[in-house]
Length: 100
Image (cartoon, rainbow, N blue to C red; front, side, top):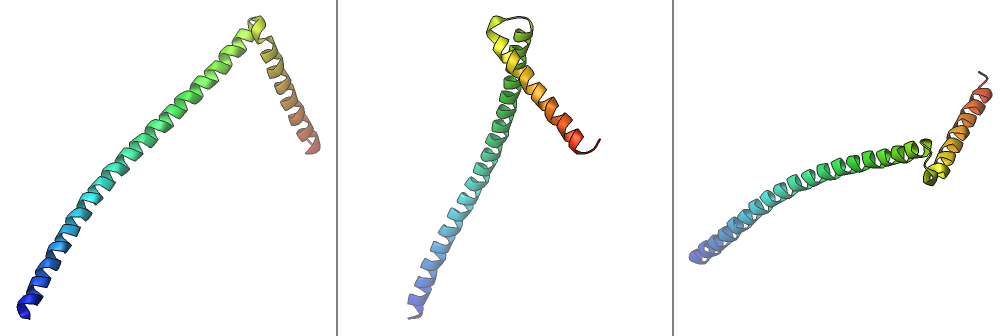
């Protein structure tokens, strides 16, 4: 009976050690994956920032083109001016409403 208990204990100990090794391996893989994920997030944020800069530059180029008289961008220029006028009107009305 005692040898059977010792045998069971030995088997249990081997299983625990095996599980512990698997746990350590998974913990290391998790740490590596977390690092990779962080790097990918940083790269994504950088690319998103670059994309936003390019979008803004594209808008500016279209606006400059419209200002220089390019017929393709006349409508863009008119829309931009209209938006600016509306924004100024809203600011003026807010100032009037606030009593200034």
